[in-house]
Image 1 (tube, helix red, strand yellow):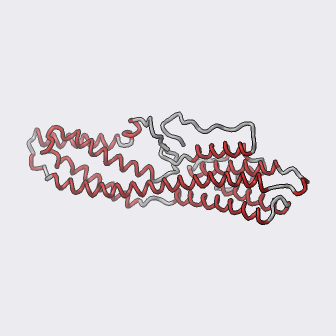
Image 2 (image 1 turned 90 degrees about the vertical axis):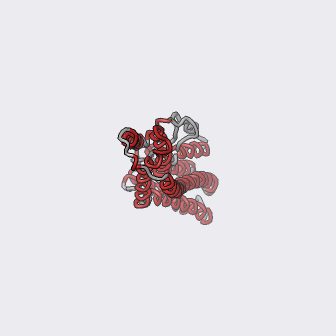
Image 3 (image 1 turned 60 degrees about the vertical axis):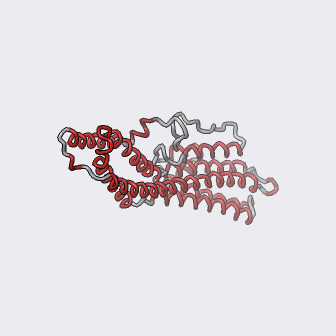
Length: 302
């Protein structure tokens, strides 16, 4: 996720450097033909490009809104994951009790909570198509690690272990049926969030819609110099570059926002969020080592 300040100019304009270079050379060519070879018949009324530019602006605004909606939905889902992770840890610590003090179930509770931290990391890494096993290994025991290795989606295996341990806790009498239902509801909400993230990840933004807008935008940019020649003369090229950059940057912004799990600076910061979840859950377990919140050293956090 991009931060509010310190965004390098090179990052912003680096996204469109090739397009802007082409536009500048193209505008310079049109200017040379008009000024030095006196080919004046190539000009067109500015109203033509004005109408087309208005249409392109509306299409880009709609596309940007749709892309932002996808990004914001992803952020809302991960906000729900934060809440449900804390709820699961709280329920595990307060609802589970050994009847008559017959057994110390604190290790069992810690295993459940550590596995929830591993689940968050596994989901975040999985959405970005990276292997989470090296990261989650420190949160699960060897048997659980071997069990999860057989799953293509590691987070699915971890949620299955949650369900298995919850069923075992009911059989041992550590929770009653009503408490088991409440804990299972929390697991269900986590499953729902997992599925929503995968839906966003696996649903491609309509490619034909993006292509049509891009083609219309390029046609507008190619047509624009011929409407600016009579108005700006030698200043046509810099004006063309500035106007084209505005439209191209809006298009690029929408392209990056539409896919919030691609390991880019504009992503939903799933790993930074998971680190905060880890901190909160370890504090609930009263552990001595608690990781600090991620302090970004760049203009974005992942």
